[in-house]
Amino acid sequence: MPFASVQDAQEFLAQHPDIELFELFILDANGVPRGKLLHRDELLAVYATGRPLPSTILGLSINGDDVEDTGLVWEVGDIDCRAYPLAGSLTRMPWRQIPTAAVQVSMHPSEGMPATVADPRHLLSRVIDGLKAEGYHPVMACELEFYLLDQQRDSQGRPQPALDRDGGRPRSTQVYGLRELEQIEPFLKDLYAACKLQGIPARTAISEYAPGQVEITLEHGDALEAMDQAVRYKRLVKGVAHKHGMQACFMAKPFDHLAGTGMHMHVSLADEQGRNLFASEQPAGTPLLGQAVAGMLATLLDSLLLFCPNANSYRRFQANSYAPLAPTWGVDNRTVSLRVPGGPAITRHIEHRICGADANPYLAAAAILAGIHRGIREQLDPGAPIEGNGYAQAKELLPTDWLISIQALEQSTWAHEALGHEFLGVYLAIKRAEYRQFMAEVGEQDWRWYLSNA
Image (cartoon, rainbow, N blue to C red; front, side, top):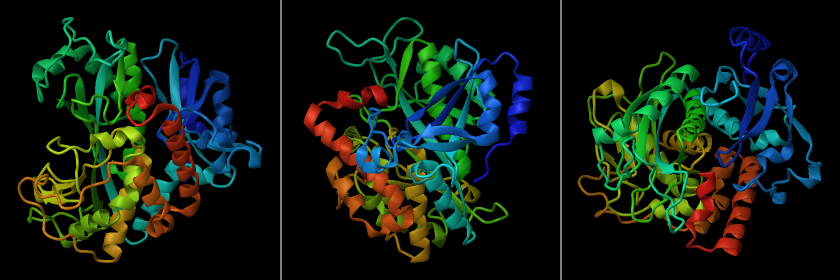
């Protein structure tokens, strides 16, 4: 795995003499950035010899508690594991009051042990390498929806949409509403500026299917780089929202009566020259695209915990909600889980609509690509695409129970082979611990348990 050079840090320091602090972070299994705030004079050492981080940093629950069953706590003495900066990740954080920059790190393959096996980015990198070894170069993009919420709860303690620029509070859906985007223009202005500064290719903004819900698309590119961008974009959105007195919420279903919040993943495969291997004048794409779809369908249940990692994730699965309901696919059809969008032949790709916005982009992408790889290797057939209302034609529904998904991943021979037994051992230990805590302390009906971490 290529890490950044000391020269990268030296050049950044020379170009940004005002920066005082550096937020060093690594992404854990739940997609939570964790790390340290460093002083300026500590940065060069991080690039030269790495930064020691405790093994437990990649074995934490969503609430930041040690999970002993991961094997990363007492039995290894919470050992220091060395992480190194990722190339291109050193960027300013313009929303911070103190001049601050961020740098993302990942565990070193050997010096980072035993935590290396639990690093989500390593998992995605391995899956991508497996595809590239057979001549397939994954291209991906991320569409992340989120709610802009008021930092203050309503009189009953419930979350509520943030106030508009004119002082009113959004109450109606107004999907694709232009006035709704105009009302959050100060936020969007700072968001796009921060994205440009951090090299994140933010594109189209949409007022989504609920009051206060927004989506901004990111440009497609190399799969690993695209997921890096999605991780940093999510952190950026939260920071800019906080600067404007709001909370950006990526919870899958923060409101029972309103639309859920998804993370649509767009994927295609290219050859070594960058030519789209799914490209076809046929709306359903090439036979290779069909095999990719079939592979994702065949591994959907086994992978579901990686797409929908929390109790709240499963409340998003509702009919006629633009959220998925069944293992289905179709062409230019938003009622299915796997959609092949229309457009020119060169743009042919698959839109994976299953993930909630609470999913870890690295893990979701790894499961998607591993499923595609299986479909190609086994030359699987996806069957006929759904035409018309996919909700009405659903024959086999996705599970709506967190425990079923945990058990499916535990029992999946394919997942343990494709994603790695060591990584899944850590991940499943974390999910089991969270499930026990959720059931013991909160109960099935209290969706607020996850809100502060979304």
